[in-house]
Image (cartoon, rainbow over all chains, first blue to last red; front, side, top):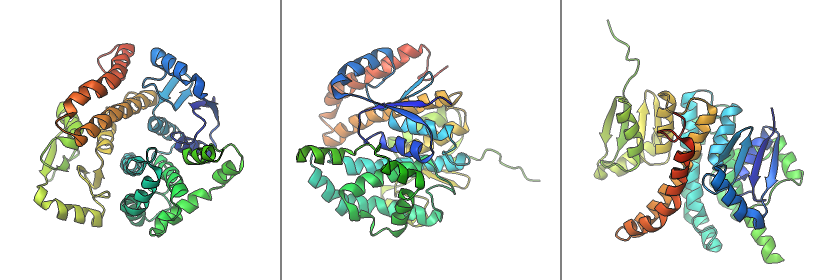
Length: 216
Length: 156
């Protein structure tokens, strides 16, 4: 089983969820970081030869297959490694919750890069209270440790990655949602993820990178 | 004696316009898959939404919703994928499935760019879409079709 190769900037951003899955599942991979200065040339070449059909990274290379779009990459790995639910009904639920997570992400990220203080205020006051309640309801009705069924699926990695990003800028948002908070803490305590964070290989979030720029 | 209905009709619930149901209705009609359509009147929406949130059949308080036997599904992309999986419209193998997903994301990006303009100013939107969304995204799909060389986005 040859290693897959991931190409992206040295930031968590759109890669975070993919790496979360790979690390938690102990799937070997190589990371090929993009240097900012070389990006315009890389993008042009990728558009021309079709390996970057939308002129964007992240990109996954698996043998002859070049894949872009982070969620397409995530679904591909999920299908390959049995992380897409046990049957078609569970697969449909994974997809349904994946969309709900994307809706939360889109709402939260609306102002993130243009007006971060306002974004954080919105997340705390309206966005997270609204969406957090949906996921609290899903976990409550499901009654297991996971979003879908009894085992981890790619939808869990999506939610955990997003919660990681949001709690970094607004730590108390999980407080009104006991099931969601317990779910998140359980995931962060998974041994391979603990080891990954301790390894020094973890990529910085955009937020921590921005802070380090401001400090320097 | 009674007949088992092997392929019971799916049921779609949505407002009486194309909106978020268009993609999967296109699929159902083109594939001649039987379905029932239950329109929701705007006056009733609040009550429908509340009930759906409480009993979990509308987990995000939104429609469209697809009922397939005991499965209640929301989120239009999830509905499309479910029907695709069920009716062999997800590519012939996992590589083609990945390409379907990749192009779906690209289509969603284009849709989001267009919708942003539509919601910002509906009268200016057509011009803006012509000036920005189409020139940016259409070349991607032109190239995808060119490289693929078939009548479809993925495979044959």
